[in-house]
Image (cartoon, rainbow, N blue to C red; front, side):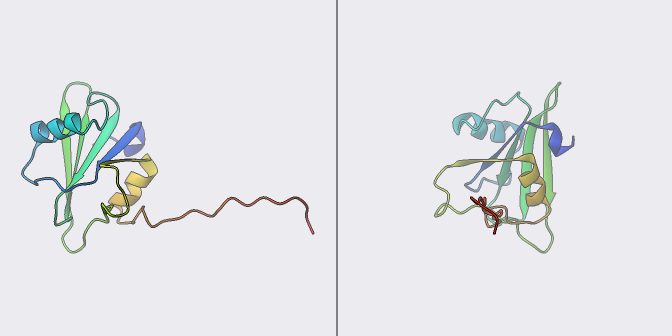
Length: 120
């Protein structure tokens, strides 16, 4: 797989998908959910109900590629429908790398912006 930072868009399908789906089935989901341009520099990310397998679909100049990662003991942190109403979530490439490393990117909060009018 090419480096994640080489892609411009990362689109995550929030709802679980059938783990048996391959390139054709996942491409159909991308089109139906209007996740983004299939032949663009994008990653399309899917997960099943058990959350132990993640699939990433992308177009690589001459054809589609499908990358899969299976966890042996853990589960991937995945957005819940209760907190994320959108069926497709857009991630940064940095967030995608964190997700693959096991971080829950939805619970991570950066520092709030701080501004002041004078220094004491």
